[in-house]
Amino acid sequence: MRSKYVFLFSGQGALMQGIDKEVINCETVKSALEQLEELMKEKILHYLLRGVPNDSYVVHFVHFAYSYSVFNALLNKGMIPEVMMGHSLGQVVAILLSSVSLEQSVAFIKKRGELFKENSGRVKADMVALIGNNVEDLVSELGNEEGIYVANFNSPSQVVVSVTLQKIPFVTQWAKDKGLKYVILNIGNGCHSPLVKDIDPVLRSFIENMDFKDASIPVYSFERGFLVSKDTIKEELKEHLLSKVYWYKNLEGIVNSLGEDITFVDMGPGKVITGLVLNWRKDVNVTNIRHLLLR
Image 1 (cartoon, rainbow, N blue to C red):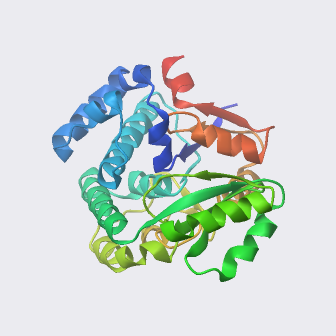
Image 2 (tube, rainbow, N blue to C red):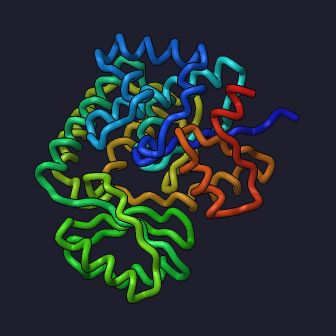
């Protein structure tokens, strides 16, 4: 029986974990990256091979270029997913790969990166992962605190909050008091929260002028299920910026719809997505780009 693949695209933080040079040097991947270097007029291979700086603009176009290249390399090997989904920026990438031309995708991802970089200079904020038992229940205590917003539900034991820099000491002390571990993510923005709301009208206007097609491969959404219609996908992209990430709920929705005999594919560099999947459930099948491309 043919494997049912689910492609999962990582958020921007995965780029900071390092890039597998053998994947980059895979003929089909490198060829696509070189094509994108010409189209984007950016030194993509330089960043992938020497390190990606913590710069929202660079992270956006490098993330898209890497994702586009490994995605097409797998398609060339006949590995067509049943559905795709991404974590944060990864969901944007999944939507673009499914329903938007390469030229318009590049224009959008670069514009989004510019806006995020500008916002990081204007709104001093970041994200903090809170880890431990009952964290979903405990984090509700932060709901009335100004400058603190729940952003991502990664697993029953991991929630991410977007926080103004001024409030980070409060959040970390609160986590210690509750017996939770915490990790400051150093994203440079308070994503999926009002801390990036100034970007929203500009992005919506940009999206309104983009051309969408019905999805070549469905994209999964917590609120909308399997996205195929170009109009629904367009609305998903418009609302994505300020919407919370219900990561493990999305995984549950996919399994409930497709059954247990699926294989999740970590489409990002490193093992961030693999960790997030296994943190949700240890008994699911999950593999990665390296295994599928270089086996």
